[in-house]
Image 1: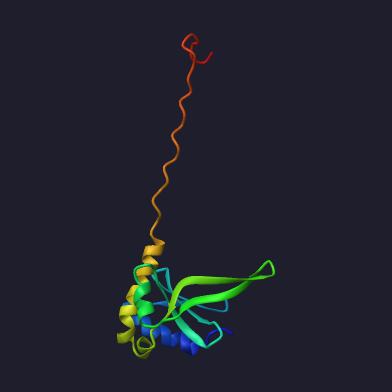
Image 2 (image 1 turned 45 degrees about the vertical axis):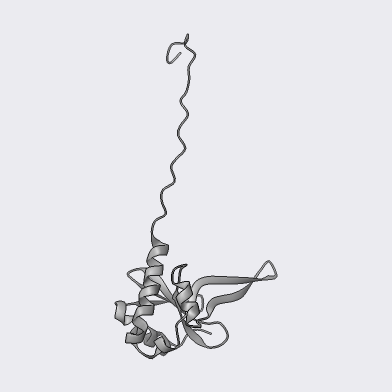
Length: 141
């Protein structure tokens, strides 16, 4: 079920401590972003609408220490159930009370989004092999 617009607006208000976030519909829920970086989701995975914040290897332990649930859902691929887990965690319960309480968590989510968006180091193209000509042949001939 799609997230209630009032809940979306409330979540945008909670995240306002880091800047003006925007919401757009995606996959039956909402994607929340700041400066074009997707940093949060609103989705109902069967137990009600929740705000899910982007996490990475550095912030994951903090979310887990707060008892936050990892975003995971089951999809069907070629007729078989497949568990899909994204790098998002439910927002801490206490952080859902005010923008002030949410701000440190929103900063973590935004930093995770920035890290994920950083361009990957360019791969070096393989060196071109030099064409060797026999010593007794003139160039072009």
